[in-house]
Image (tube, rainbow, N blue to C red; front, top):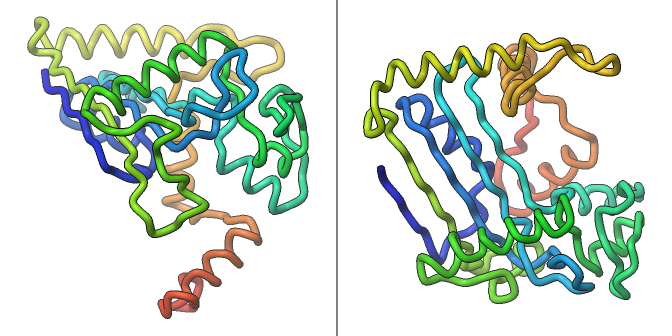
Amino acid sequence: ICAVGVRNSHHCGMLAWYGLRAVASGCVLIAASNADAQVAPWGAREKYLGTNPIAIAIPGSEPPFVLDFATSVIAHGKIKAAAERGEPIPPDTALDREGRVTTDARAALDGALLTFGGAKGSGLSIAVEVLAGLLPGGLVGPEIVPLYLRLGQPQGVGHFFLALDPAAFGDADRFRQRCRQFFDGIRALAPRPDLPRVVLPGDLEHARSVRAEREGITLPADAVRELARVAAQLALPSPFAAR
């Protein structure tokens, strides 16, 4: 069993990437990261918590079980993208600066995101701040430098990783076999009438990854323009130049 705390860090990308590395080695991984304040705790009208993702990855099946989710209803990046495109956001995902629920993406950027599941998601988010921020002696939401407002300045984000070797608990091969039977049993269940099949966390992402390896990645036009602009600003070759 190995536990690692990280402080004085930055945005670490998707936690699922670390989970996939763990399951490739036959280990279970529990990971969490805090972030700059974008989310209102349950009952509050102002942002104080990060979007604070949690990931749990378990070996045994193909694709592996990889749960990776933000504790906010919606990721901050999706709010920002909606604001740039002038599109509304789903209801009950964010507050404006007055604490009112809003579907206006720009108003949400001035206000605060909401946690999923009400008080339950808020409790998980607070726990992430403790595990990823306070436990390794780092910062928590309000103290972390905003990612999008001060690019290039150290953020002070914290991470928490707990890796478990199934062999420490018993027969590792038996554990993986039981996990495979359990997961495959869930996938084999009859789906609801409005869904094509039952999937586990990580299944859809795995399918998209396989398709992207084969067909490439489709980017929205605004993302292509922004990447090209940043490349030009940094005097780098365009990522979309013909090869």
